[in-house]
Length: 269
Image (tube, rainbow, N blue to C red; front, top):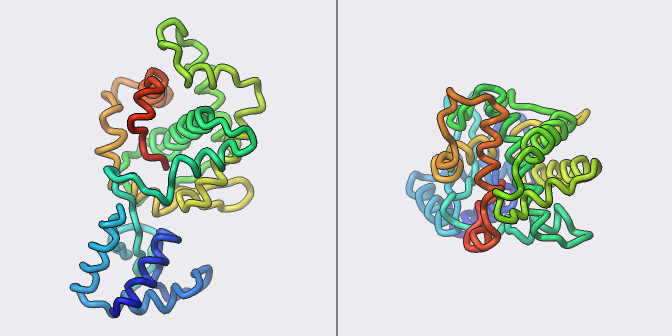
């Protein structure tokens, strides 16, 4: 692998976050076929150099085949560029989130709050309601939900949990104020923006007819980063129902002050 080829591969991975080496070429990105050949023929030393290059930019290069995860054909490989949980990634910034979630109003606080709450609801659909742990990467192939299911999950969370909280105990929480101000139209609008953004950044795949599936990239990143991001917020799962487990996660965010958020928010998606 020449430095020029390594540069092309790193550029492709940073843009698409995934590079496939498979016999079936349908749906492959431009130049992906040629770059896959380069990776297939690369020496172990070349691969280590590429891993170090990606590591310096805040990523972990994960190589998977049919023995590692379901959904990969025999003799095929998939190269995934997973973000490091302890590094900020400029490619997926807060400003990008705000622009996609609430560009017209420019309300950064509301955009971040809605994204975070819908993100938690979508994790509930992908993991909790399937009795699935974040380490169970293989189940990504069957992890689907509809737009209507996500909207209903968010609505039940707001009406069944958030509105029942005592506002006097939330220290003037921006999260509480934004969610309880919802009048019936915000949920559908923000859910659609969330789904579009998650598909754009490769974390969800739209299957058609309003059905969405977790991407392999998302499953890999959840497995790689779960212990450092969400695990500290979880409590004994055996004592809780699925809805309360989601509420437990949300409670930690509901009571987080604006100052704490500005001093280091959770990396999104």
